[in-house]
Length: 596
Image (cartoon, rainbow, N blue to C red; front, top):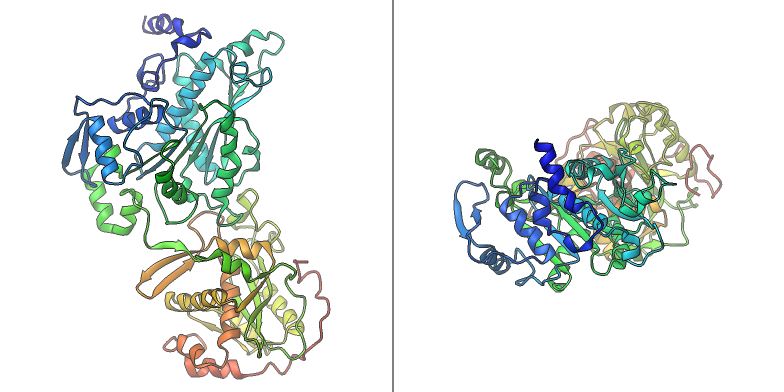
């Protein structure tokens, strides 16, 4: 009886009549719709996005503190909008009747962001089906495809959002029987026009697609809705500004839908850089088209456990402020904070060198990773007259156990010399270093003592005693990266025009640990690495500070396995690698050189 009742109730909605399209709140909460019980703030957000009237009479919204322990205010929807705007948690003070073309929603974890975006996607499919022939309605060629695209930082995250949207569509009595071709990354929905074409029974002109932010298959679509899930973490292996590139590539497709096209950018906040933060800032100057909300988790989700939130805040207040407080981090920034100056240090006519030049002293930086992390080598020298440091050479390799092979379009896919090994064999790295010493007379080189015992022993057994290892603390990491940053800021470095190196450097993050100390690292994202950057800045540091008081002071007080305090480190630096003759430029064997 219940199912018969629903069927009878929904029969009036099954035609292509465009006059009876209901609003998104009705669609979400109706038994024939997706049956989604919205929290009051979620309902408020959807009303604002679609330009629905706000309630100015009933105090429907409770504002708790950030741990959900007590209620601070009770507001009507109209009062709530005013309060948000006054506290700069919303960019607009009034809602236009036609709504907005873009939503930027900064919200803490467990706010139901993906649920809300799935509701928006489901509603847009419902509206398209109600058009009967949506291609004709929007003036496209007959049976043109219209898409909804979901993009997330990784394929796994995108899959979660996709599954949520598909489950809502399948729960909707109006849409469920129109779904065809269901896969793990896309499904299709048939319109009345599609169903009328008896010769193409499985044809469907509406599609929902999903993928990670590095997926090229998502570009070039005719999107009425683009959902950018966890947009703050759109830093893929194509460089720091990949999020901006994705946004730039996808947004124009929404412009063909007479104001119905939308971009939904939702995420918990992270650092104060990247496309999500940029859109947050820009929203204050785009009030006619863009709606922005910034909300902590408990404000949106009244069911969050207070004890859990209190425990998370005690554990790490800075992390809590980002993850549940809805605040962008003041501690994490991009390491390259002046890209124009950095780009000026890249010599477009210069590639990674194949050999040293007679009379130059060369210095090697090594970052040894054996399983997930890569092993990287870099060589630099300093011109004694101009004082410019030149990055001459670098290379990096990953074992078959590394996560880089799981990432589509990873910039490291060519670094495959040791992909057949579960663990990179140190003996092979020693041979590469030994070979490089013949082509670049290395005066000094160093690496971290982590994983470095065997490398140190084997190098010294071969007489390569100009190599030493140090305990790379956060303090030393901060110092050597600061030297490199100062040098690029003053135009005192020349980098080769190698995409892998430049892209990795551009995605580096700097986390402030104390007043004068930062930790430079790769983004906290699967498939992201800083091995090449670490090796390069170590070679820069060695070339720039060799034999200087500053070079000694940076490692003063540090103890390594070979007893390399300030005095002994300088002693190692001053030793000449006499056993390796200086050679003129000549080709390095192909097994050693990857770059051309």
